Figure 1 (cartoon, rainbow, N blue to C red):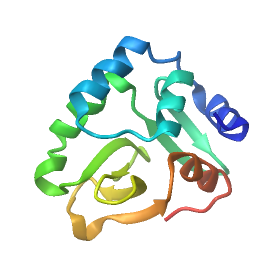
Figure 2 (figure 1 turned 120 degrees about the vertical axis):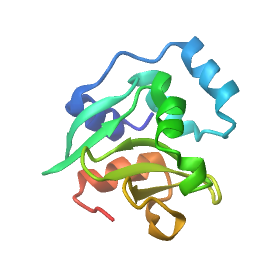
Figure 3 (figure 1 turned 90 degrees about the horizontal axis):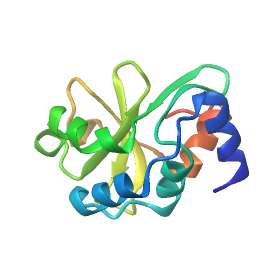
Figure 4 (figure 1 turned 90 degrees about the vertical axis):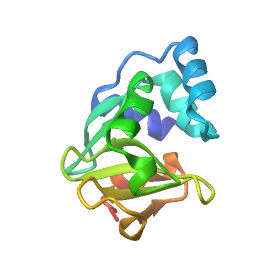
Length: 137
């Protein structure tokens, strides 16, 4: 895992690492090819909550809640091809665009549809580093 990402996550409020069993269950049940840098994050911190950069609040969900939250938000119905992994604590969700090369996107919780998807970064690592630099959306 990139040392800068470890530092960002550590300052956010790092959780305990996800168990190998939880990650394996998610990978078998999720039906998506999760990017390696995201799996590295889960092995380092099973979710995280805090401020990144000067003022960007971020909530990264624990692995055990990913599938249920995507079902609860009806992501498949409203934004097929998107898989959510967190939010800004307000009206925007963060996720992977499984229709592309798993780039990181944001989409509003209310009014969620593919027309509202906004590209943020090409990878999970780049996403966190961009938020740290104050680049958002």
